[in-house]
Length: 257
Ligand SMILES: Nc1ncnc2c1ncn2[C@@H]1O[C@H](COP(=O)(O)OP(=O)(O)OP(=O)(O)O)[C@@H](O)[C@H]1O
Ligand SMILES: [Mg+2]
Figure 1 (cartoon, protein in one colour):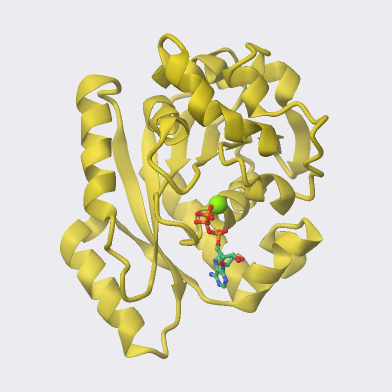
Figure 2: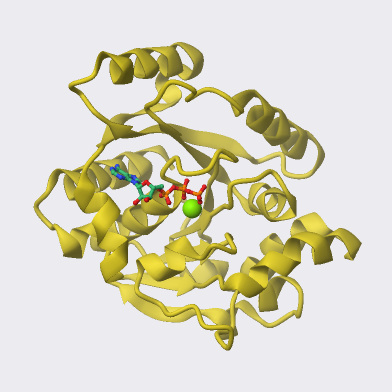
């Protein structure tokens, strides 16, 4: 890991509900617990990573939109210490407008990268929770990122849409951001009792080889409950298997960056 210049990891999959925000919140908390200085950027107008850390998303709250569109400095958007060693740039519903507004801006793909540049030396890792689309916000995530984590839900249509995602990644890598790499593919909502889950893991491994993280995030209701209390799994169910999985993932991530 390069000192004094955060690597930026975008958590990305245009498919909805695969565990991006759950991973963003809990990986941030687990990396923070390992004493890494983390900034989590919520790049999804749904604001699930924001509420996942218990931050109220009322319309008055300054959010990443103000940085991308209104040129508010990143510093002014940061909510400090939402968990141990974790800061947050939140998203509110205001961010929904950015998708269309960015279309008319110059250098629109670079807005997030430019926003984060001045604060990069204050963090070890900046995590970006992307929305479930391949629109302007996600392209901004891809442009800013050093690495991608692609969560894949262990279910029948798991690989659907990935071709499009990988095509988009390739275009951004070729045209805009040569440094972009896939850090890993993360199997989520894994249920070891079903043969389907094993089948999906095999299929994804055949496709991505050792890019697939050893850690598989188990399906557990605790992970689904934690956000309604505005807590990461590390504080909601510290000793449970969800917390264990995200701790294991954090170690793998540190090992790979
Ligand atoms: N390992 C898990 N076990 C059980 N439930 C989970 C797990 N991971 C995520 N969930 C639940 O599945 C739903 C989708 O997860 P999440 O919001 O993290 O996905 P997402 O990819 O961010 O969705 P979106 O594309 O809408 O942003 C949520 O209700 C979440 O609580
Ligand atoms: Mg999400």
